Image (spheres, one colour):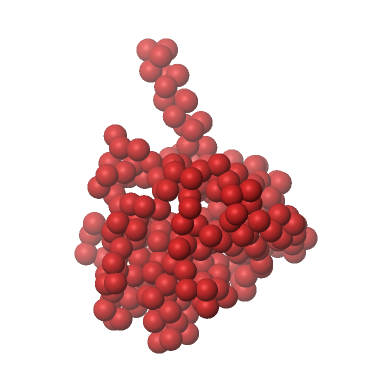
Length: 253
């Protein structure tokens, strides 16, 4: 079974278009809830929204209150929300805080950012297909270089691996930060959040080969990774708008 954990942030973002839609702090959460309710996702039993503290406690609490007011979706998925510790590690800190808080339920975790959404029924099955007892995490896209780095981080975390990591390091993923700020904390976390799993005897996998993975750039624009002619599993916000734009250009030509 799967516990779906969404890292939520309602503060201002580098991507101005995302900042505009999140003027309603519950907007992205509503899209997630709508997708979970409409898609066939029988393995997802719980969904938790971890709100990374922004500069507005009122907006953060608005999200928590909204989700807690729902409690259970029409398809039986239990939903909950709470505010995390800080925003030092961006989504990675929220994921870690969520897993630590839910470490006793025994479910694997599907970790996802608030501006990416499932796009097909049982979207998690390809991730499960790459998982086994020796794999800690199956993400959308892992680095093809020799560096251990996840390019698109959303994915399936093994409960067993997260628990072992917590028992050894006190956290479910690595959330250490650099002493000298050579990189943005979010980029640094992206590069290093999985680094301890190899020490624990685990590997990392991805689902790049048979699926298209659109990536929302921080400031603007969108890039396609993975196999661009294959279907998507998860799509960033505005992806459908991007497809319409491409289609319209082709029609006009």
